Length: 490
Image (cartoon, rainbow, N blue to C red):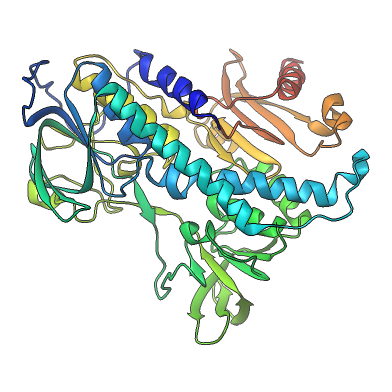
């Protein structure tokens, strides 16, 4: 991805004003803090301090600086971009693309008249390309910080008061950063499972799965969510025998049920195996490989599975460890999420939270929108995020992109709706390129035709290089959407 493209996209996100529609108010009341816009050079106090340099944090910091606020961002990793750019969205998409190219060359090129004498995986080169993309992008954000005059502090920040953060720097020093408004944007961490120790070698999280030094012969994925299916796809394409173990009765439970069933069938045709309604009882790493003992979720006979590598992908949890939230009295829920009102303010005056640490979808583009809206509120403007318009995407092949409500949600809410569906199998463009697996499904209000939800399973259902508030679709998909809409209106 070209750095110039990244800059243009970020500039667009950061410069635009959000909608003035009212957000759903949460628990706490809010009183807008008055502050001085100008500070003398060298002043230790900031208008805004952001703890965390991920998609929510760095976007919030840049937006604050663009609004004329003296801003400091604290990041413990040593590189900006958070999980998404360093060990999440970006490296996973790099490997998904590279592995798909290999799979296409091996299985599809010949039918298009492109013959190769041999195709082989050069895993070190594949990993190097991934690492280069990550490095370029994280350095690019540092460049944006410098351009927008955001002060960048590398270290672990924790609260010592509602307006002060103590930072243990990567060099071993300690400093105190003061701010009239402090935004918590520390993101999320891998959710562990009882009795399973992640060593990032044989039992790995998504971080370790992005850095394996050889293709495992057998890979077991615990968890059939977005990350598990994406990483399973990467290594399955490169030659691993992949088995997905899931406690729930379905894969990706937030997905529209009809789409989900077709999606699972597609993955099974790619030789991905599924063990649903299955509980992991224990893991044994005493031998050369890994032995997993599993049993039916409802109880029953136990079975032993063997693998070279086990990927734990059971979700993510808010990262608030060591922040000192209890010291200043910030309230959290049972899941460890920070409770905020509709202006992203916590119950402690001057302290805000955005992104994965608050309720809502744990998605990078959602965190970005949170960051912009939060800073706009701090600056006395009006920010807004419509969580009904936050897309979700599984970047497998075919991809699955959705925005709005599923049919199950529409039924639960008692909405009066109609459904339009159209298969890519009947789409001429899809047939012409011999890639016609997929479907478009639209839910619309029966009386007004207002779109309630859009679900697409198809190649390139979402662009992996851009995260905006709606899925980006190809012209092929536009034509299919048109045909689907016509079906609804008949």
